[in-house]
Amino acid sequence: PSSEDVEDELLAHLDANAEIPDSRSFASSLGVPHRDVEDVIKRLCAFRIVGSTDMTKEALVLTDEAKGYVARGSPEVQFVAAMPPKGAASKAALQEILGDVFDVGLKAAAKKQWIGFDKENEDLVTRRVKDTKDELQEQLKRLENGEVFDDKVMEGLKRRKLITKEKSIWYSLKKGPEFVVKRKTLATDVTRDHLKSGDWKDLEFKDYNYGAQGQPIAIGYSQPLLEVLEAIQNIFVEMGFSEMPTNMFVESSFWNFDALFQPQQHPARDSHDTFFLKAPATTPQLPDDYLEKVKQVHQSGGYGSKGYGYDWKRDEAEKNLLRTHTTAVSTRMLYKVVQNSFAPKRYYSIDRVFRNEAVDRTHLAEFHQIEGLICDYGLTLGDLIGVLEDFFSRLGMSKLRFKPAYNPYTEPSMEIFGYHEGLKKWMEIGNSGMFRPEVLLPMGLPEGVNVIAWGLSLERPTMILNGINNIRKLFGPKVNFKVIKNRPMCRLGCSKVDRSSAGGD
Ligand code: PHE
Image 1: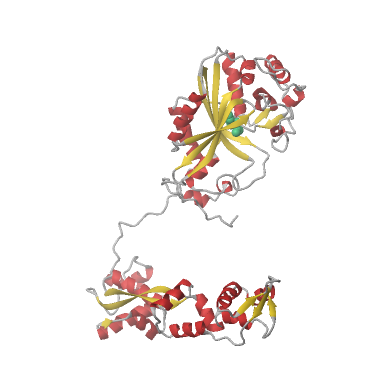
Image 2: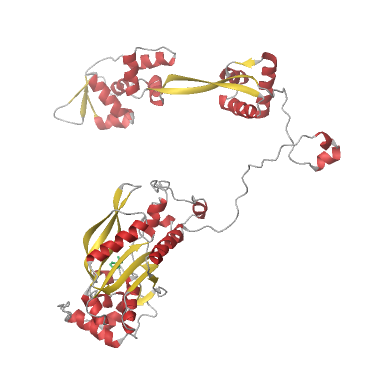
């Protein structure tokens, strides 16, 4: 029967009998699932045509596991039945026959001392009884027929997850204040047929629903990365930083590595980590005076440094690459600051960098870096820590920890860890340090000027803030626009980590 049929039957029944004491028996008298009757009841109650009282009862019912034992015997009996009448059987063979029941059956049969184990051979089980009586199956069958045992037995069955409490809901029904035997369906439109037949005169119309939600508007939605980028940009601006030009994705090795005192044999310069360009393969125009000083500092040091003591090659410095960090931009800017007469600066950048990395849920070969730097006279590590605390607390992370680290261009260097209040754990959030004299002095920065700087990826905080656990959902061809459109407008707490991709992509 259709939902309309059920409704007609229900109303006719109420009209004749004034009440329906149990919606479950009414459903079975119609031969429909209780769910279907429930839907009709909800609808009729909303129109006050029918009044209902909720009835609930908790009952103990057999779990699926227990139903299996009723049908096939208890696991201990199944276990013994799978063994030969005499002698020993191998566990592996029994496992093969019994599948899921093997573990439970082995335990239960051993407890009843129906089986024994071979001290010499761990894989062997011996049968100790001829016949077994299936008390558990008997008990479960009786329970199924409505019998109840004493509390101790029931508790034991519950602990073995063989019975469970199940709540059932049904309704007792009577006529409501708006009771009718046949519900009038209200018209929402005047159709051509109504006009032709003339029955539009008798139509009753459905009221307008002024509380209804409108259609979603087709407008643009912000990408989470851009949203976090903007928030971080605002933080930098509030803190008095100005933006560095980051439009050069292609850089020479000189600015990306050499000027940063990164030796030419450094593993990060290997093509495994760096994308080198085929065309144009090199940048021949480099500032010659400065280049000469960089060469000297690598080869033999100076400015109080011993250098690396190797034969520095201009060819290597000219090789073009996709910049591996935005520190390449910082290097260029520091050099530029010196060209005009030096003045203290606060600079930031947020843009793309590239690394020849295997792609996984937290790594892409192309991602964004956030970088901040301050150059001024007499800066200390304390200044760096203070600026980092200010910066990250504005992002919602006010508990920081630092761990000594190594970068070729900074000394000291520190990894930054932040305590995430939502996830209740410490996570690595960035890298930082004070630029080495080997970087600053060849550029011509005045003695006594220090540069403190830090860098982090944009993707990581965005994933944390939005509870996204796979970077490919955030950036690149696998981004699902629907997810971005349906994102909540505010991030509440960010304690939820999205697990919807577990086992997915
Ligand atoms: N360039 C570093 C990186 O790619 C980050 C960094 C920036 C470290 C500035 C120290 C100073 O991880």
